[in-house]
Length: 230
Image 1 (cartoon, rainbow, N blue to C red):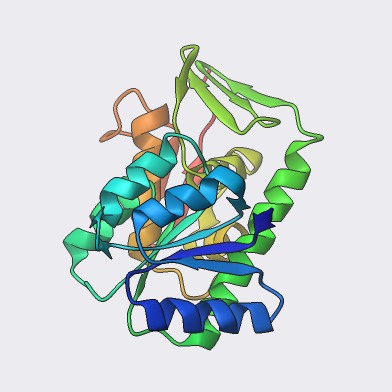
Image 2: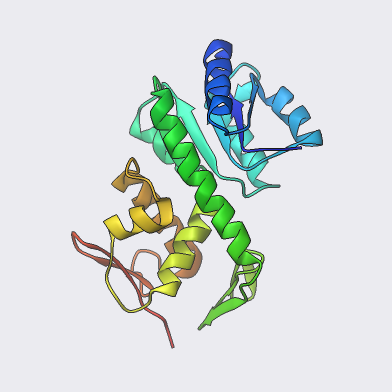
């Protein structure tokens, strides 16, 4: 069975309340309270999105995220009471798509989840009829959402892929941060910090010298521009 959202949180009351709230608004959700029960869930079910707490009773949410990323590109939104920049950067760098601080509003988190699910569904549906993008030493297999650089596959999260896809579809022009928030995240709650981390990860994948980018160029105080290479 496929669920819209899997919630993995050791705070049972909060996880159950969030799950019940989502189900009331037609977002089919399931709650687990540790990584082991989540692993059992994946043996029989799938989820289109994961809400993952950092502090789990049987290990770190960071480590479990890495395990998930080895098998799935499902969007992962971290949820945690930990609010340091270091925690946020770690979460995004290991494959998280966003970071939501506790305590959260059920209405706000539902809105964010619905946006991500809508975007994910659209990406999956459009991939069926897509082919590929080629430029210089990079190739994007749009049907399977895979990036190859010098014929070597580069691992991307779902959000990183969506961001790269949007950039390559809009070459040689200024793409503002707001445009990326509106068209890639579709989410007014996304922060500049989240975008910056994803841009850095993409540069590490597609640039010969990530610190001196030629493809993903920063337009100061405005946004970015995708420059195809010869």
